[in-house]
Amino acid sequence: MNDFLKNLRSSQKKDTAGTRKNMAGNYSPEQDRRVNRDRRSPYPNTMDSAPWQGRDIMPEILEHIANLSDQVERLVNSHELLVEAQIKQHHVVTRFFATLNTMLSKDTAAADPGDHPPKTTTSYTSGTHYTKDEVLAMIQDMRNQGATFSMIADHLRQKEIPTFSGRGEWHAQTIHRLCK
Image (cartoon, rainbow, N blue to C red):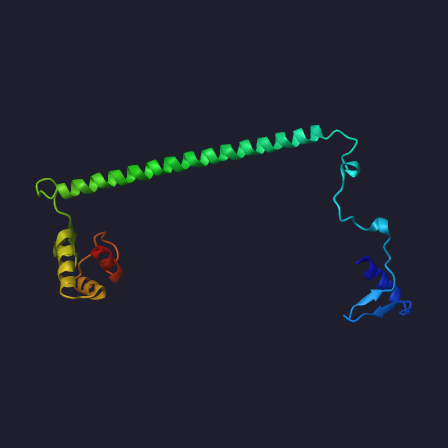
């Protein structure tokens, strides 16, 4: 790059006789401007010419090792905290599903009409009452007869049967989830 800049500066002097074009189309100077001491040796430096020769580098090495040790210790501590948090999360999720399982098993065991009143859905405009089981049976019957999910949702909307949550209206995706 240095040669390029020198050639660029010297080109303003209109002295271009010093360069010739070689066969590859590149310009090369007539003589090599670097001297032997500027060239890099193809052999690595020996210990005699090492930059640390003549000084004690052990304190610097020990300081770097101590810094590295501190950083590794911090990294290990942060990973331990992360693992503990993941274990706590796993326990919470496990407890949630265990509780959900017991609640669902109580609901299936409570099919006795004496334990809990059946869950009903009410259509306020028509005054009809359907239990959740009746709606599911109606959906299953229509599905067995070959009705599509959107046809079932349209039928439930026409009969003004509210959803189980009581909010919104029936959609094909909702029927699909219930059938799964």
